[in-house]
Image 1 (cartoon, rainbow, N blue to C red):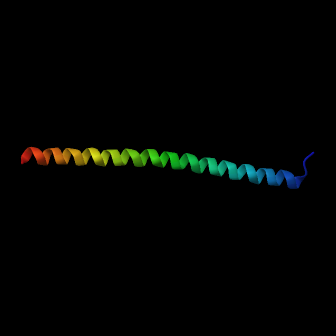
Image 2 (tube, rainbow, N blue to C red; image 1 turned 90 degrees about the vertical axis):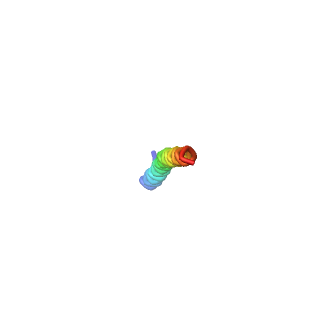
Image 3 (tube, rainbow, N blue to C red; image 1 turned 180 degrees about the horizontal axis):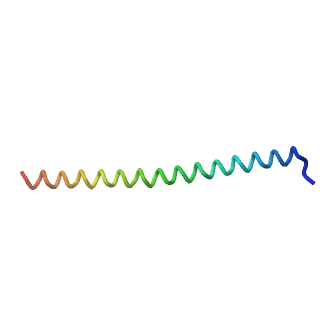
Length: 56
């Protein structure tokens, strides 16, 4: 049988692991949003350049 100290340590370790996993998921989600934003800005820039070239 595990002592209350061992149980407390195991709970803290589990909490840290859960927090790290949540942080990893948050970073992945931000990376997806950031990539989508960069892609949108690049498309807008290419559209502007194409319009500028057509007018010249």
